[in-house]
Image 1 (cartoon, rainbow over the protein chains, first blue to last red):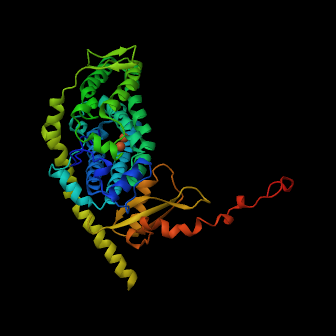
Image 2 (image 1 turned 90 degrees about the horizontal axis):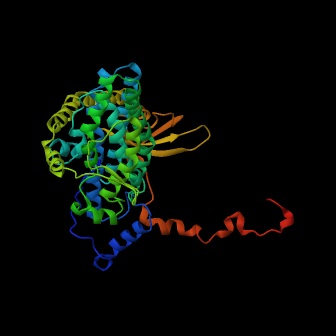
Image 3 (image 1 turned 180 degrees about the vertical axis):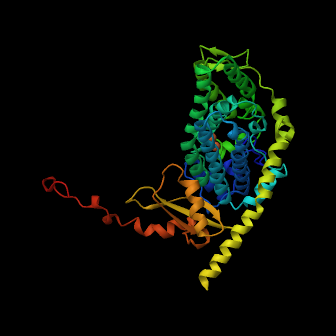
Length: 329
Length: 93
Ligand SMILES: [Fe+2]
Ligand SMILES: [Fe+2]
């Protein structure tokens, strides 16, 4: 998802008898749904996994601003431009809430950002796809943020206190993101000309499969899931969340009057769920490895922003010091 | 960001309520911390007043001290109103 395939560094989940007394007390606390707070004892693997997960999540929020930023100057009306800017500003906020939560685990923000720039830390695969037309702003809000919501709602109950509180804050803001996106598409479909309607369908066709990949590989291929579930830093399996997303999205797709690019998509009356076709996991792993359409561009843009903003940060410190000296004098 | 200070942010959401911890921000000084906190934590009228405090200035109880620190109040149930049983005819008190 926003944090896909987070390595736990743990081969198999320990049984109670294999745990030290500290580990037992820690696990008992988690089982009792008592939040772990920064100063509580925690296993090193839990701390490291959370740093990986939360930083990946934070990087995704930050890199996620780039595909949308691409359309700010070309939004069709001033109203749409203001809405898009507000949405993007929220994503910056989400990144910052998450970096703060990550720092409570003793991680250094600059170091973690550096890891992303060096390709050692990941961000969601979805942001490595280009935004080619205006309808993509609608599709991203509706589908990408929609998928993010499905993932983030259960994370509000995650075992680590600061992460859980960041998620609660994030979830409050996501509904605006999804609704503004869906409204963009609905407007194009209901008021638009043929070319505009085609633009919507084209956008959905391009984003559909990459959005389904956001939830990560099938349960059978998620070696880290068991430990993450035991620690309650992941609360549902990838397939479960993906199914939940599809079931809630198809009726919205029908209201738009659009289709999904999946010939195998069909409703199963018995189970009450939508069945979908095979996901191309080769594509997913290629994008994750850095070979997606925009990986290089995204990282280069982030690096540029950090490097070219360095003088502003330095100037702020110089100014703060000068002010302090003046006040002391 | 290494030479910026980490500040904890407290927000009063409405007049008459306490300030409540909401998170943290990095800033070069406290003035900038207020500005950053405004942008980060009050984009939708979430507050009427903001406090920022350098994180390093906060002294906290160690979470593992919980028992030793808070136990003494456990056995003082006579500090609660419900401890005192009064006859019904007294009514609400
Ligand atoms: Fe977000
Ligand atoms: Fe969002």
